[in-house]
Length: 322
Image (cartoon, one colour):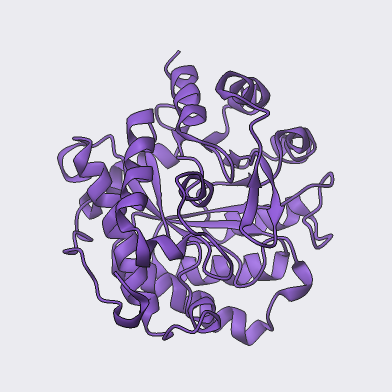
């Protein structure tokens, strides 16, 4: 499938799972313990030999290697993931234009990403339309620019316009949940939250916080999290930070009583590929470092970010079953 002719190659199954949002809402409300989110997509594609160069990063695979995307999702379903994150991390119009692609392909590629996630779920015999237990499909909604560069956040008008468009496109593609992730400033998080709240879709929000109580921008983590919940977020927390930094975030958030999520990474940013994996933490070590979060009754979602694998998710699944 070449870039010169990007056409949807999958039959849309976006309507599947919509009837299951009621049961997803119940789980997000705390019934039956935390939901198990999947792990990394981009770094798993990179590990499989798929090109993931910037600015498209994992979106390359939607164009050149859709079967690899489906395989990654299927591996996470087999590992026990209850939420499969569609590969929409870099399908925004501004990123496509930067890569020399038509901005209008945002809808085509987002729909393709969601369809591939649903096909993977169905291939593992866990089609959402046949069970109240999921898995469900989340649409990734990251910062418009760099996750680790707060100084690159666009102006307020661009934020509001483009996040509204992104939520609209995700909704059209049929996601069950909007995953606003890797927010590094309070103002971009607020814009994304307002867009998601207006859509009527359930949504959750996670932030990048390496310093105690602070986003990368220096904004207050607790304040940003409270605002998100006040405006409808079903869970708030941190993602794409190393396990060693989780204690500081937990100290800030655990006492708030807010519904929480956590999804740490295993590695570090890389300007060439987007991320460099680390193999220093196996599944059991990963679970051990998440134990303080797993002990919280307010935990709603737990999973992995860049560098994590189906093995890490499988270890979490075993821990949650036990």
